[in-house]
Image 1 (cartoon, rainbow, N blue to C red):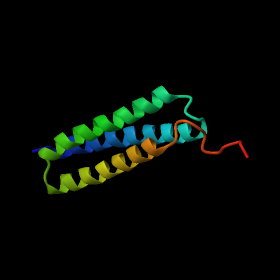
Image 2 (cartoon, rainbow, N blue to C red; image 1 turned 90 degrees about the vertical axis):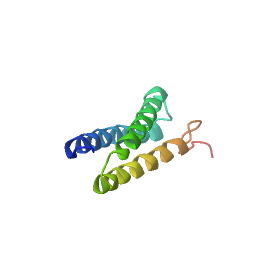
Image 3 (cartoon, rainbow, N blue to C red; image 1 turned 30 degrees about the horizontal axis):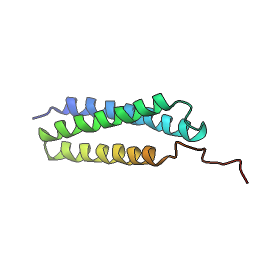
Image 4 (cartoon, rainbow, N blue to C red; image 1 turned 180 degrees about the vertical axis):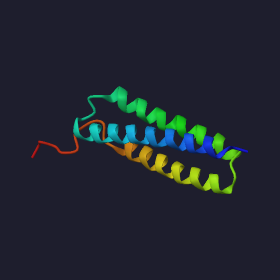
Amino acid sequence: MTTRQSIDNFINRCESVILLAEEQYEEGSRQEHYHDVDYSEAMMDLETMLQQLHKMNESANAQQRDQLHRVRLKIQQLQNKMILLNHDRPLYSTWH
């Protein structure tokens, strides 16, 4: 059984990774992805947290699984946004 404190610590780490990834997403959408390495690392960090989340879920109780499920949805939604962001050209084209 996973302790409450370990779940809380894990969720806090997930929230930190989510915040950093959101910053990379915002920066990437404004700067045409000049920082592709940072963007890719943020995506990898999200995937790592998702894998760890699955492991924690195995030993969690029902309430903890519900908490982890909500965090998983946040991570997956952000991953989808980051994947769908166009890396080849800016969002606001100067071509008319």
